[in-house]
Length: 593
Image (cartoon, rainbow, N blue to C red; front, side, top):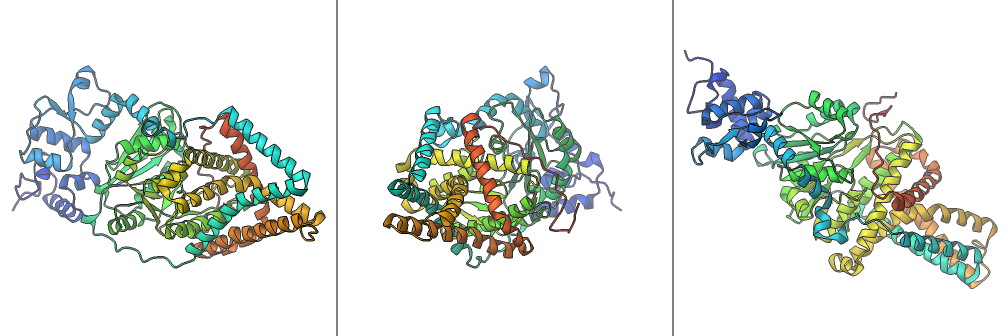
């Protein structure tokens, strides 16, 4: 009877056959080899991904097999620091074992994690500089690194003062200012109505799922800062993702001074699938900078971004991979819908949920069907890595990097589509946190609008007149709508009650009345109808009575926009951190705190 321990059996793959000293059951190793063939990976990749053998043990055995020293000391001394470390994986490891390449006699074997840490330590300054300045070096006009000047602030204040004087003056001045206000709102309203019509159409059939061996390698980037309290929940969500572990590359991106989160990750994020990446010190301290640091060492062909509180559909990666496989290479991004889980925490969270339902269930799919630029959401957007690198990653200086990325993808001729595989998120339920988040978003939209209007002729040349107009209308609407909307609403009520809005006597009054009433009706339709459609699709119809509070919600959006405008000139690159893990309710499990 044969020994149950693993012999040096030539029938086993070369990258498993040298593990004889470990006395692993032969049947287990054959099972691993079969699983590797099914997934289309090397046998050792499946072995390590399933944590059957620790990487340190496997690579120590590999070093014995290649007659090379093994080094896995994270605190390297001077001698090991000078040594050339190698950590062969995949085809490179198989070639070494099959003697297609000769190992360097002066090299030392290390684990991939040890080698990655060594390289990050050695190249920290270079990595930090590229993460912040790669886009600006390639095209300075496309980065928000340049701070708006005091001259621009003075010009903006002068324009606002002249507008206010025109509104108070009456007559022709009133008509001119009224027309300008309506024109500013009209572009955003018309684009939103178009997107609503497109989003009301039925969804396209999804691509059939790929077998495991045809799935590409997938990188997941998770930027974290001061998130120790939600690490366990985050890792639980990541563990539920249905994708071959040997093809996953999960990069947990943290800042150098965030000791608490680092310790939580080291305690809970086990296995080679997780790579804890400490961002080297640098400026600005923003999410897109951290994403660029993760992108630099991404191993996947596809990449997605999740936030600390995200709980994605377990099938999201498989469905995205299938959609990319069926689409042309020009499709660079898939946006999955974001859904608010704690909508019952407060009226703010409830309206936030309805807002997201309108955006991700109706407006984004509509823009995609019309092939118009889509300002992306900050998470659950899936990219082809090659396309992201051609665009030089995210703009580290833009605090709403997702909207900017959507615009830059469109300008480079890449397509964006949507995929109905939701990610559940937590919304700020209290006013201070809600205001801080919205202020950052608004400031980023202002940055994005400034960046893409720097060279308007080039913008039109790259996008075409129709798509350029739609992009600027969406960006301007996202900024000017909240800024001008409350003023417009107040003036509309005032003129309706005490002015000539509903009883015009002069030609000027009639023109102004027609403009203001049209904008009021169309604006209400453009605001409410997508919410009604999105609420029905996301199962949020019980929240619809909250629409009675929509005027208050819009007023708060105006306050956030005004605060963002001040921030744009005072601290343009400041990142207002949103605290997670405070939810008291859940739409999915009925939990009420």
